[in-house]
Length: 252
Image: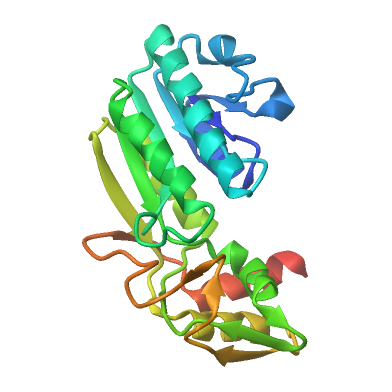
């Protein structure tokens, strides 16, 4: 089965591609670096020729809100049009849990647009909404740092390891489209401030975490419903402790 992974050279894309190749599938890792650009349409037709499924992991090169909106609308529209022309039978899109609940987050409205284009596009689809990746906890801490203090929300957080995300995405890619949205999350739910404190301790970072209900997560306030699944969700296997151990072993 030929499967095209858009954004196939990124964090999740490389893992998804490896899993699918390990199952014997013909995988194309498509990205601007490999001559495939969903924003301009360059290389799309050739990459999608003969493909049965497409996994969309494309990401906006800019995080400026207007640029994010424009990217996801144009990129997804171009991709869906190319899939229809190529006879692709399944579009898998990776999105984010809670995107409609945090409109002040400059990135989330772009994902709302992406999902809308996919649902209306005419290609059978599966949308996977994921919670934040554990791999991004360092960046979250950095964004909330003032001096030696990290001001983090005590709102509920349920991060998931990239390896688990890739497993769920690869599973969807080889399954029949469901024309619905599923949600995935990590196996543990607790305050964001607790996760970040654990991350700093595990990485021997001297910064102190303060639970601050007024702290913002990339522009938005976080409560106990903002960033976690509110209904059924598939849960990953890697706990934060297991992920920390895996990370430290890899870095050693």
